[in-house]
Amino acid sequence: MKVVLQNLTKTFPNRSRKADGDVVAVKDFTFEIPDGKMVGLLGPSGCGKSTTLFMICGLQEPTAGRILFGEEDVTSLPPEKRGVGVVFQNYALYPHLTVKQNIIFPLQNLKGTEKLTKAQMEEKAYEAARLVQIEALMERKPGELSGGQQQRVAIARAMVKMPRVLLLDEPLSNLDARLRLQTREEIRRIQKETGITTVFVTHDQEEAMSISDVIVVMKDGVVQQTGRPQEVYDNPVNLFVAKFLGTPPINLFDGNVRNGRLYIGGADVLGVEGAADQDVTVGIRPEGFILEDKGPLACRLSGIEVMGRDISVVSAHDASLNPAVRSVINAEKQVDTGGEMVRFSLKPNKVLLFAKDTEERVY
Image (cartoon, rainbow, N blue to C red; front, top):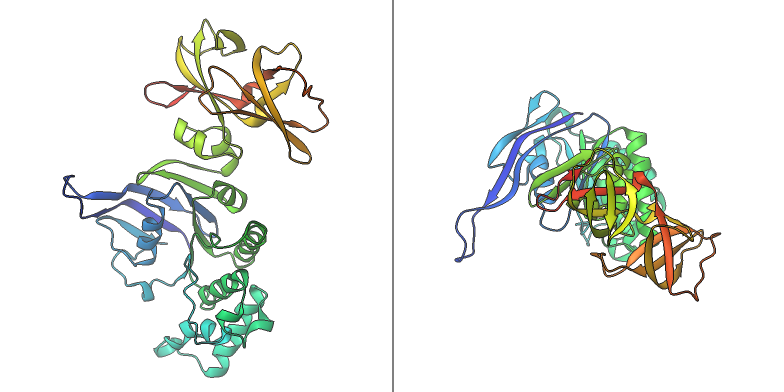
C-alpha cells in the first residue's frame, strides 16, 4: 500500500506565556512511501517524527495537508477504518489477558462481513504468533515475559489483521543492546516476508540505517533529507544531517579553501577543485583517515581504543570543533603509542565541506 503525505502540517497551541504563536510540530511534510517498503523517520527528540506517525494512523488530525493510502484520501477517517497496525514504545499490552487474548483482541472488534468465529480468530492469532516466533508463550501473561518477548507480542497484535500499513513508534528503545539488534533483524524479516508498507520511527540512526529502505531525516518538524541510508550518509545536504548520522560521529574542523586546496590549521591537507575560496566547516568521517608517517594532518595522540577488527585512534587538534578527533583504522596498522603526534592523509570521498553561515554543503 503506497502512502502519500501531501503538505502535512501539525500545530499545537503554545502554552508558554513568554512566546507568541502556535508550536509547529510538523511543517509542510511532503513525501511518498513506496508500496511494500520500510521507511525510517529519523531525528532527535521533538523533531516531529512521532507526530507524523500519529497523523498517519489517525490518532492526531493534521492542521493542514492530506494523507492518502493508495488513491484513497484517509485524512478524515478514524483510526479503526484506516487498516493500520501500530506498535507503541511501551508495548501497551493488557496485563490481565494472556498473550493469545492480547493478540486476538483487535479481531474481536471486527463487525459485519469481517466478523470472525472464535476458531478463525484463534487460527489467525497463532499465525501471527508463528510470524514472531512466540507460539510457546500463548498462555502466559505479559508480566511473565521478558521485554523482548513483550515486544514480539505487541508486533503480533499489530500484524494479526494483516494491516495495510504497519507503524512502529520507537519499538526497541526499552530493550538492551543485544536484544535491540536481534529484534530489529526480526522486524526486518517480518516486513520482508509480509511485504507490508512500514513506517519505523526512531532517534537511533544506526537502527534506521540498518533496516530501512529509505530514511527521512527531520529537524524541528522540517524534513532535512530523504534517500537510501548509505546515500544520505555519504552525501548529507547540510551539517545537521552529517552530524546526526554516523557512529562514531563525524569529526569537525575549522578550515578554509584557497586556490582549490583545503587547509586545516594552516596545513594543506587536500585538493578541492571547484570549491570557491571561503572559510568552511570541514567534516571528516572517522573511516576517512589514513595513517601515514608523512601525512599532512598532524594531531596530538591521546590514546588508542581497541574495537576488535578496528582500532580508534583518539587525538586532538587545535582546529577541531569536537572534544576529540576519532579516527577508525584497521587493527593491523601499528600505532606508536609512545609518540606524541600521529599523522594522517585523508580519503577525499570521506571529507565534506559546509558553509560557515548557512551550514549547507559545499560541493
